[in-house]
Structure formats: C-alpha cells, structure tokens
Length: 427
Picture 1 (cartoon, rainbow, N blue to C red):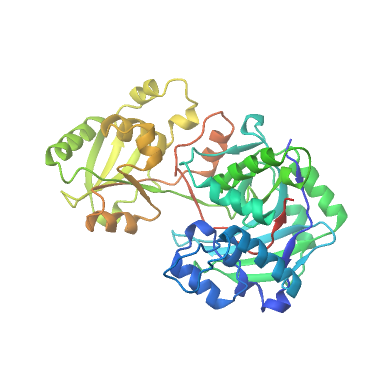
Picture 2 (cartoon, rainbow, N blue to C red):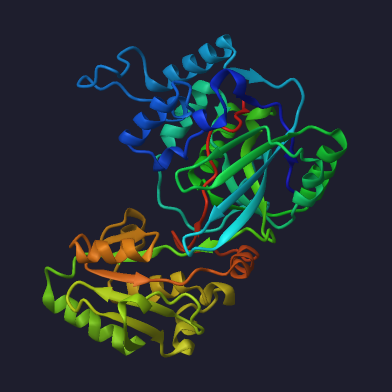
C-alpha cells in the first residue's frame, strides 16, 4: 500500500521575494552554467542557489572558496530562514499543482498533480516502481545535498494508478498561492490544501495505488540510500513527489529518439548495417517532413535517417513471430514496445551493443524532438537517427503492471515539474 501523506513544508514567503516566478527553477539536471547565472540574475533567492550549489572554481571570483558547496547550500537555507525568505509551515498540507502547456506536437493540455510526501519503498514491494531502466547517475551529488540540507528540494514526478485530483479540485480558491511560467511557456499554478477532511480523503484514495516514477529515478535512489543510511523511523523515510493520475486527461507521453555513431568512418559497416536492416524491416522512402511515424499502426514502425543517404525512410518490422521468439518470456506489453524492439533487434542485434554500451551511451545518444535528431545527423555529430512513436499511456500502464521495466529513455514526459514551489523536510 502507498503511504502518501500531507507534510509541513518549507516554502518561500512570496511577499518577501516578489512572487514564485522570481524563485522557481527548472530541475537541476537541465540547467547549465549560463542558465544558472540567468536564474540568479532574476533573484538572488532563486532555488537554483541551493538545489545546484556552485563548487569552488579558482578562475571564477564569484564562486565560494570556503567549505564545500553542499554546506554552503545548507548555510544559505538557514540564512534565508533568518531573513524570513523561507518559512516553515506549522500544519500539514498537500499542495495542488496545475500545468497548462502546449505540447511538443502543438496540442494544448492541462495536467494536474498533488505535491505530497510518499513513504520510500524498495522496488520489490511493488508499491513504487521505476517505469524504465535508468542509466547510472550521479547519485552522490544528490545524496551529499540531502545530508547537508536535510531537505528534498526537487520533487520526483510520479504517476499514480489512483487519481486524487477530483478530491482536491473543489477546495481550490480562484487565485493560486503562487504562479510561474517556465521557459517552455508552461503556466504552473500552486495551491495549499489544508482541510483535514480532504487530507484524510486523499491519503485514503491513494493508499491502494501503485506509483510509477516518471521523472526523477536518481532522486528516488538517493532517497532510498538516505533512508537506509539514517535508519529507524522518522521523516527520512519519506520523499517529496508530485503525483499525477494515470487517467488524468492532461497526461501526455512523447518519444525519445535514438542516435547512433561510429558508422560514417566505416563505409563497409554502414553498408552492412543497411543490408541487415532491410532483412528485418520493410523499407519505404518518404519525404523528410513525413519521417515521424507518430500515428502509424503496426508493430515495430520507425523513421530512419542517415548521414550517407540523407533520405528519410519508413521501416516496418517484417516478422513479428521472430520478434516474439527473441523476447520469449517477456510480457506482451513489453514485446510490443518500439524501444524494446529497437534495443533487441537493432542496438544489440545488428549494432552489437552490450548492456554496458547502452548504459554508458557508447555510440548511442537521445533526442527529444525530430528536428533535433535530424540536425545532429546533418551536423555530423551522429550517423543514424531512429525516429520513434510515442508510447500510449495505456501501454505505460500495461508494462507497469508487469515485472518488466522499459529500456532507458522509452518515454519523455512533458512538462517538467519545477523546483522551488515547496521543499520537504527529511530530518
């Protein structure tokens, strides 16, 4: 059973900082040095100062030479508390979140979620599950930050098989507690919900849910490590999540496309690879603007573009029975995943990649849009692009109900959940 509970958040005093728009930030793992500087120029109190603390750089007079960056983040939080910039809630609450956005495909949607504390479980329990295999990540960075600050600063985005939004929505005021428009023009609105009856109803509704991590697998691994490190009962047994129902009408899933390198320098390898692809797939030339296979029916349908031919192709798997033999023992929902088909037949089969190659991205990279994928091939950074279809939400649910996880980067959930709306104490 999922243990989802309201919590006494640490959050910004919005009157003190000039509103949520000044202090909210994208997730730490999509911020580069220029982006960090731009956020701090917006406000010295921006969440990036504590969620992505800057290490000492002798060539940078603005970096901090005293102590490590994680302790600096902890000191900054205490300083902001003393200034009244950050305040601790005295009563528990859930925080309701709406995200009005234009998707990469041009559609307009509104996604709903609830920010809550969720008890950290081992995956074996089946309550909280990864939805795809993850690449090895820099867990130590997030662990050191948690040790120093005793806070979850950035929420994990998870999908719930039960939807508590209908219980929360009637309690929302016409004006949110805070509002911020992110760099993708997503309008994020946040409300604090503290009615005891609603809090109890939400926890009860979600108690029977299975939670699927959509974005933040490494943060969840950090939470498990921190829980085990501290030991015993206490707030460290919980982690901050933004929960969206799998049936939420605003939930959309987009594909992540595959890019291969190491072929252009070896014409014979490129020729043999193309011949092998034609053995497995029916191939049809298409216009470049028709390379995206989204909406196409069938098992194993891809777009293909390479640096040699500079021609778009549509690939369709010839022999589904042969695929099923290779993936014998795997659930049907997994055997029909384009990313699993591509990994099994092409990356491992034809390109000879190992699990280590895929985990380490050796000869492999990803792109979140078709134009980006094509530009990277045309620019010479990669040699071959495989354009994938989005995974239907129903297929995500079907795979989640099995013991199998999708290959890395099978899905791209948009929009991201921002950092800085609330922080969750874990010590």
